[in-house]
Length: 418
Image 1: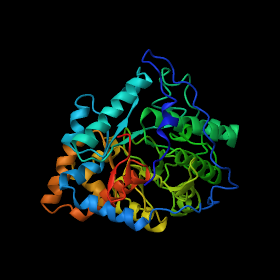
Image 2: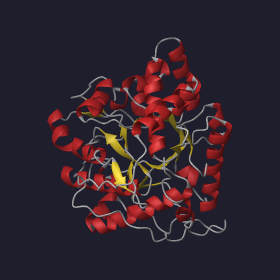
Image 3: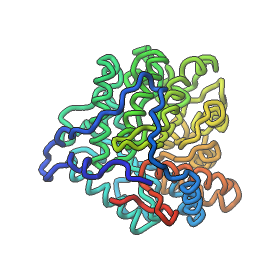
Image 4: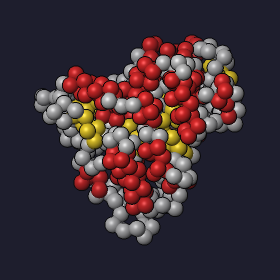
């Protein structure tokens, strides 16, 4: 595999000291090539590409050489713990760390860069040799884990609704700056864009959306996904199958009573638009595949599965995979949220989420959940083939993100810089 983006171009963004200065404006980097619509595919360059089967064979070989414990750990995209974060990378063979405000507060750029680099070094040189996913929720507006820190940006990134009203140029300009900033700090995944449709200011999710109808939200979702991909940043479309007017699932169960027709005609459209953005022409001129991931909500959607939250529902995942044709990584919303606790048999919520069809488990409680998943495989409750299928998709996404690259010998190794 080729490198994602020249490291020198990204490093030009970094601070030259640790004195709490703000990150300077991003350097001049070419904007994504304009297109008449998000559906217009870029022209394929004439230069030869690595055959997909060679990379797929390397992925399968990598998977085959991993232990059950290593494969299971790769499925966990977890909140950074307050203590022992470095040690836990190797203890649990983690797939990635997700940073919240606590992890970025009062940090300088150099603080973050060094901390993230230490985790990557631990994973690559002292554990599996597989780099970590490093993610953050930097949606803009009310959810800004990075730009809320004035040491990292002079002001918070704008909300989706504000940017969409300002026009396409403003949206692309700010998404460009956001992507370059996050990449320069060491992030490779942004849990955005929010693909939920909400036109009622009274909805819980409204302030995190464009505030527009399904068609405009679909256009926004595709544009942001395409722009983030252009700079090598993984996108996460959320919150499937569409949040609607439901209440906050952080604090309790939300039951969605809307019809399937509503989802087909409205809520699915932004997800379908984001999913369609699979290939992007990179600054180097290469045509590269970087599929977005999809995050599934904890809402109980009666027309799909009246008994289980979407994140734990095999039927909701079947709809995403089969009806919408999504082949990339599917992840849960945070399993520590109150909306799912009552539905997990004996506390085995991660086991249930993998059985439902998730590839990545987002949770704070990984120290309890990882051993339970391993035990479920050993006692036959969970089929190891489910672990293998999920792990393969995670590894494939890491390769698309440029964390792993194909060597001339036909093996995968960490990309230069790790």
